[in-house]
Amino acid sequence: MTRLMHRSLVSTPPVAAAARGIEIFDAQGRSYIDASGGAAVSCLGHGHPAVLEAMRAQMETIAYAHTGFFTTDIAEKLAEMLVEDAPKGLEHVYLVSGGSEAVEAALKMARQYFVEIGQPQRRHIIARRQSYHGNTLGALATGGNEWRREQFRPLLVETHHIDPCFAYRFQQEGESDEDYAARAANALEEKLLELGPETVLAFVAETVVGATAGAVPPVADYFRRIREICDRYGVLLILDEVMCGMGRTGTLHACEQEGIAPDLMTIAKGLGGGYQPIGAVLVSSKIYDAMKAGSGFFQHGHTYMGHPMAAAAAVAVQETIRRENLLSNVKAMGSLLEERLKARFGNHHHVGDIRGRGLFQAIELVEDRASKRPFNPSRKVNAAIKKEAMARGLMVYPMGGTIDGVTGDHVLLAPPFIVTQEDIDRIVDRLGEAV
Ligand code: PMP
Image 1 (spheres, rainbow, N blue to C red):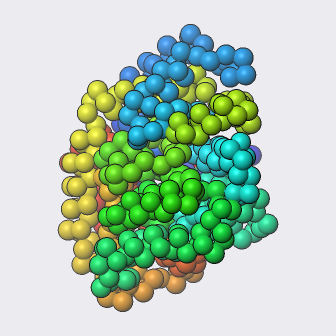
Image 2 (cartoon, protein in one colour):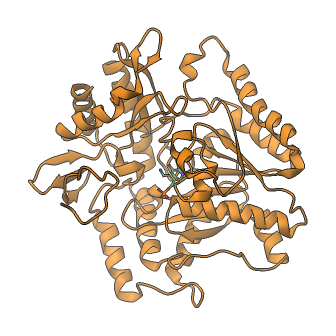
Image 3 (cartoon, rainbow, N blue to C red):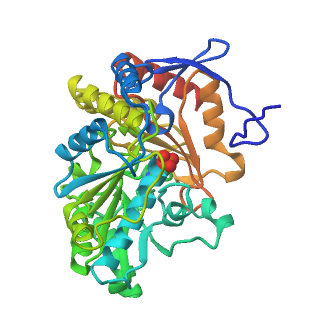
């Protein structure tokens, strides 16, 4: 019996005993290719010497200082680096310890901003049904996946969900991208008008929908339309790039490819590459300046925010990505991965769709390719694929219930940015055997 409380209370996962590069080794020395990067986290792979060295040096300098008393050079350096490459207008950085904390901070910042500028009636949040924004209660209320939320009602934040968010576009063939983008964006405007736009705080969305829908990129022009609608009604746009951001899709921020900038953006996972828990909110000067001129204080904080060890790991990870020009590898290997997946599974009877951007790709598993009919959820197909993949030394990220909260199966691939052509071939071969 294990004393450690795992997610599953009836089974214990294998012991991860060591890791190097793109592989994790269990206690018996079996190797697993980390083709999911954990949960799209390990962008540099494991044991990168530059990161280990930076963390060692930081530990010897100062490992912890509470932000209520001090700032540190390393946290300031990370903020500088992040702002240097941030989408236009995002000029400040709020450091936290992970994705959910970043989402909570962004929601509270949005709320405080409107209180301070004299619009306290803005309290509704609009988000999308096929989305995940974290597991703390505010973030859980914001995400739209009903099966995750139902037993925790009443949720603490008032959120309203709209459809669609591109997931399962393959089920709606025949509609042009332009019409689809317009229809998807209009869903936001309709919801705003229904609620009364002056009562709405923010629209929250993942730029490329991650775990819950399976690496679904936006349709061209969708986010430009969304940005326009938000501006028209004075609603903040919060992009959650916790999973799809920090280089995963081939550009540092996924929204660069959409040609827009949000008012607040959450990042985490790839920011520290798994070496330390870290997340951040990138904050627009509009919000920062108003709060500074108002109360001059953000009414929020966590014990470990701006942690020097986490900042040191993130600086080293981000410097390494730049020094080794890894975003061009993400683009090249991402295209190769997509190509190989299409070649291998394009005609597979049980594969309904293959999609993604950069090293963020997913295959959708269906009962029957022609009708795209999903599997009966009782068959737990995505979990079965994960199990079969693990048995073959491959980590993939499974997810079910992603179409309507009940049906839908996909597995997500998000390997480290250092993967080679040979690694991609091994990943696709093992996945093929598992499927
Ligand atoms: N937002 C998104 C888009 C995510 O994918 C996740 C994690 N899967 C989170 C927020 C929550 O991050 P964390 O698990 O670090 O709290």
